[in-house]
Image (tube, rainbow, N blue to C red; front, top):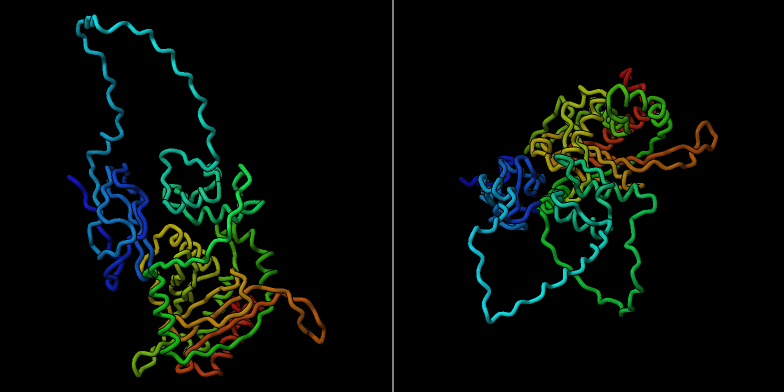
Length: 423
């Protein structure tokens, strides 16, 4: 009996999804827990795996919008073994030899055909049976990569698009070029063209929320700069011991998350929401951490960050990054945040004005660390500096509270010991 493949529920508020990509073709053999396809909703991207071994039958092709619970394919469990078994070897029937016809003269046996040497295999050849998404196969072919040198981090060691991009970043000579075969003919310059693509559900949702944030809040941004010397020195001094003790690297995000937690306790209105004509103050800090992905920006939430140490914060971030890469992020991971931290510095941003993640009343923007001349004790010195920006809802937060909050974040990061001593 065939097993129906249905679009799973990812939350009560989500009624439909886009079947973004099939990892298998119609008629392919699949195995239990092997990823079959990816769905995209307006909030999350999720991989759906096979429930049993069998032969896949695709009903709904990739790119279609489907309702939650809709049947998009099926698995024939009994067909897998039959497809995998080699065909039986045919034995000649034991019948008397037929007499040669008189009208057919005997023909000399044809000489054996000369065996041709097999064509050389290119470095981009993909081994048979290696499960790869179509987009990953295209990228491997375009960049002429050797898949045997790429470490897969997906389910079951499967190579993901993120693994390909990471491999390219680590390549000593940049992106590999195709081997020269012949001088390319000269063609006229191509005519400028356009390509129209529908917005993904996640991109639509991002656009809607950002537009609503601009239209429905009195957003204002205040700036400051932080001397990262002390934080960098502490990180350099203890990073090896921290890694050995906790099994996770010590990054700067934990410094800023912990600094924001302490500053939010002192300026609670930044941790508040507007609900109709009321203000809701939260006696906890659920910190959202903005993470950029190929499909858009997502903000998983570190719950009760006020109860966590540096190592727990770093582990939470690493776990979320892994879930995002493997398309395992759940709707519950994105809900309930009271404040957001966004690090544009990883992309090289020097300064920006982050947009509020409504209904939250505040968001901190981090930026790249850059050595700049600053005046300390009437002396001009070179220090690693970072600009920080706090965007806030002026309906909830006054300028005094916003400036005080950002100043406290600066003091905590410049002197991390203050967070440990709570001063």
